[in-house]
Length: 293
Image (tube, rainbow, N blue to C red; front, side, top):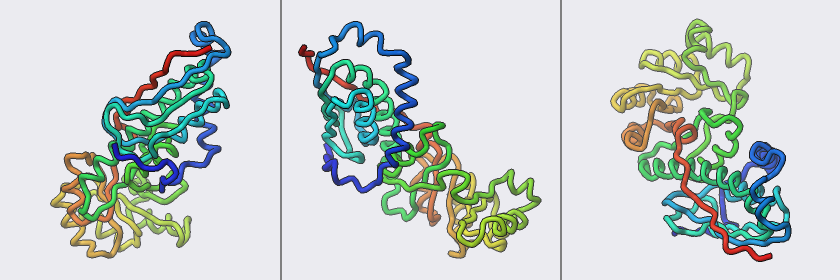
């Protein structure tokens, strides 16, 4: 187990108010009018302790969120991470310990694990691709293809895994895509309108599908160009053609198997929606010790 001190995480956790809002929505969805099973079976004063264990190898993300879940249900619950977000773990490793009121722990368990497993899945897939492209020169980006409502947390998990973030939302940068170009009447017209409307501090990126469109986007003054669904050979030609005039991003069904070939073409970035929309949740479980009254 690659253990990092929990206080040494270098990736900023999303603001607390964002975490609180998401946690409260998730708890309201799961608890409803109460935890029928736990309230019926577990004594009001019963205490419990236990461990959250990894059931597969992966990269942990979401421990600060899990802590908020447990303590939102019952402030008396003590949640202690045993690794930091970003740590690599193996099957059987303990990632956190927990103790306190048994009812609260049982009520919060599923929501806490849902966040932990989903975010750890994103971090794990990101780290796998980052490891594959190590030394190739390109940087991995996420996309807006996120689970609705979880974007801030998924983007955090992607950073934990070693990737970097693309624009956060539609207000965070101008990305002129195929349909924008169609409606505007061409790349040049679209870039000109975007530049006038947004001003010089906004990055304007244009999605292109051909080398001819690449030339037009460069001439129009795009700051960044997204090379969509191009083969590695086409990407190399695009890099040569751009000759360093503009930042280049590759995108389009990039996976662990194809990432290295794409990263070695000379593009500056490549993005993958799979990081957030198709990451497999990391298998984790909470095991409690016998309850004491």
